Image 1 (tube, protein in one colour):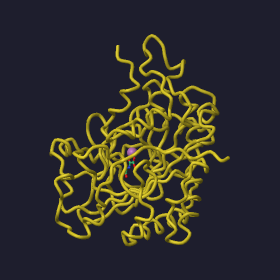
Image 2 (cartoon, protein in one colour; image 1 turned 180 degrees about the vertical axis):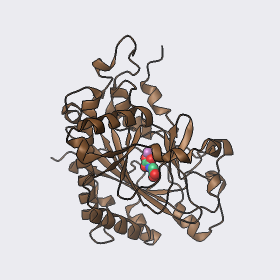
Image 3 (cartoon, rainbow, N blue to C red; image 1 turned 90 degrees about the vertical axis):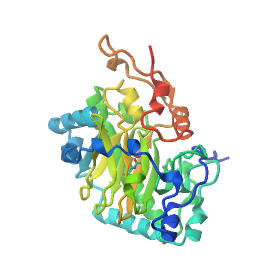
Image 4 (cartoon, rainbow, N blue to C red; image 1 turned 180 degrees about the horizontal axis):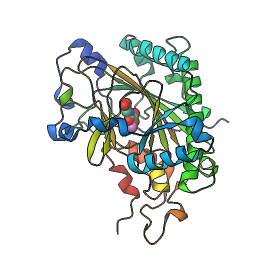
Length: 355
Ligand code: OGA
Ligand code: NI
């Protein structure tokens, strides 16, 4: 008998933001309004955007020492970097962008054929909504587990536009390849043999989350996506180059990540922070919205299989660097993180050793 694909986590049903905006562009319901303190535009440092490291994947994969050192610095100081020369074809990215745009422009009745159910966050809807009084994000999402293939729940994969399923599959497989190459290099800069990190991802879990951020008449009052860190190993994000929105936490301030044509934005997740005993940071990030433009982004999350136990590697621990995190079973860690609202780096604290 075939094993049933496991569920990720439940989330409460909330209104569709795109429809809300379509019906009334000026209305911002109370549940979306944040306090100015939460938005913190004062600590906004856009000029640092160009300091976010840009890494050439071809050089990195060839073992170029300068590129490896850039990766090490990027993971230590930023937790984020952009990848160029990654080999994901421009034409495939364009097909993915076109098909996604077409999907989100379909009538709501059509999109709701793929609506998330109450026990899982695969499909079209909203994740991480855990209480009736939680402030909501100004976005809708399509979330699909893409690998391993037996995890897929094909009933949530859109049948319109025609061919979208195949495009998602092709895109996800190509981004997975890029992710695996980055994992090999990460293994080296962490001080392990090249294959070690990949070896911990023998059945690598990959999920795609397409974020749709409708325009907002008062973008300073809402957030497209609450501040959070990603719980997996690494995330590879593609953003439309005509609208910005991603902001990352750097030295206590917010720095926007300016979309760079054809680059993939990569960030280190909680699993890498734990394995590296905090040397590499899973950095908090969020998305803001635009007044006149909608924004779409595609995040591919890579994570270890559920039963992998994640804890700091022995060689990362010494007298100057005491063990900061306890062992977690990754599947439990990830599901617990999905049962709470996204809240900065709050979740990784469950793994921290507090002495
Ligand atoms: C995410 C995420 C940022 C963005 O989906 O986890 O951080 O710019 N997205 O959409
Ligand atoms: Ni994220």
